[in-house]
Image (cartoon, rainbow, N blue to C red; front, side):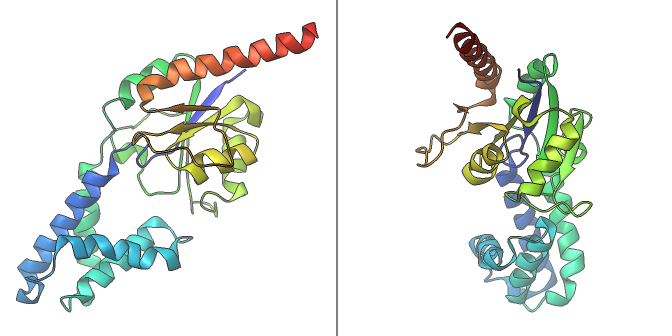
Length: 238
């Protein structure tokens, strides 16, 4: 029996990429307003600065990684001393533009009548700032109260505690193969891979279900419950 559906946030429920791009455009505009030295700086360079710092800082809070990326960007125009003000510009625009994918509100409304819903993320997209306020029975954020980021086992242990039910009654839904399929299954949870981009399925693990849109999720969960019931009935008959 499935009782609880827990969602990743960014690129699962929330269309983050346009928001981040909008935040970086605002940063670039502010850099150019402050100094002519930023005239030659491009949006592509600002976008690349995240990847340049992420490898070394991937275990750090997402906001800290973003600040490090912004510091690298500002160094291109000798504006590092203005990091705090320009980070505020970025985060204000980023949160103002972060909204759910169109398939999210109707899917959540359908699921809420049958399941307990949770929100558990590595990122800093807080539900109440992104158009999803009041939609979940519980919310978990990496680096709050010492919680490590996915794919640390402690993250999924915290999901189980917050849900208050056995791991096998929980389904984790997300777009990351490692974080939202492999690691949850290792922790005893069910997993649904949200494959919006139609990517080939990696080897070595099989999600309990795969969907290309959250519109498909209610039916996928119903099929999981039915298959579990069939398996139990078959075992009893055997």
